[in-house]
Image (cartoon, rainbow, N blue to C red):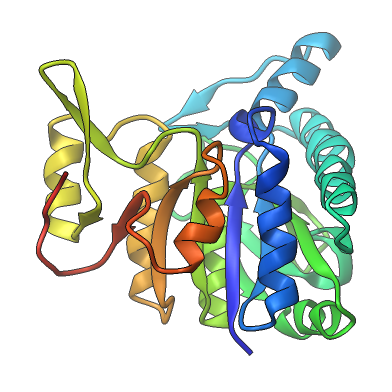
Amino acid sequence: MNYVVIKCGGSVFEQLPPSFYQDIVTIQQKGEWQPIIVHGGGPLISQLLEQTGVKTTFINGLRVTTNEVLDVVEMALSGSMNKAIVRKIAEAEGKAIGVSGIDGNLLEAKPVKDDTTLGYVGEVIQVNTNLVKSFVEQGLIPVVSPIGKDKTGQRYNINADMAASAVAQALEAKLCFISDIPGIYHEVNGEKQVFHQLNETKIDELIQQEVIFGGMIPKVKSALSALRKNVREVSIVDGTADHGLEEFMQGKQVGTRIALEQEVPHV
């Protein structure tokens, strides 16, 4: 079975056209690739935190998470966001099942390495692939909210990019980050020039030059980590482009494809 893990961030969710969800259903129905969605929900989390008066801060793009913050995060991700995506797939005549990483011990987590400042922010140490495969065998598209727990039952907020990367590693899948930009690019004379392929050396250089910055840094780092651990391919694709996801799956030159070592042209 071939899997493609599709990571969909909260910031792009409102901009995704109906064709995005149709593409996911089409990919599943063709049978060659089985889609799995892992989603974030940053803007909704921020909105709910503001409404509830819960204070929050960020360190290196990761949200500092107290138990109070975690209650709101879980409400936003595993509740509103997760079910909204399931509904969108149903509208595209697909069948999805929304789950949290806590459900069925899907994502076992531990605190992020070497960092005691982030609170209950975790990283995935094990994925229950049998649970994912059982959903797929029933003709369902799994939609995963990135909340995990450890063996004691403590919940952790997991960066959605990193959660998607962990799921892709466990399934030896393709990994596709959905964005609202055409890929990683720089501007020359006011014109966006997309890097259609990037390797590790060039990524490090672009981080130093601050071409890659903010939330894109954990995205590319998790991509490189995934490639070292059996992930077949990592791409950043513009989900707002009509049928961009389907074109990506057809192997067309869409977005930015990331590899450990290769030539680095840009157009």
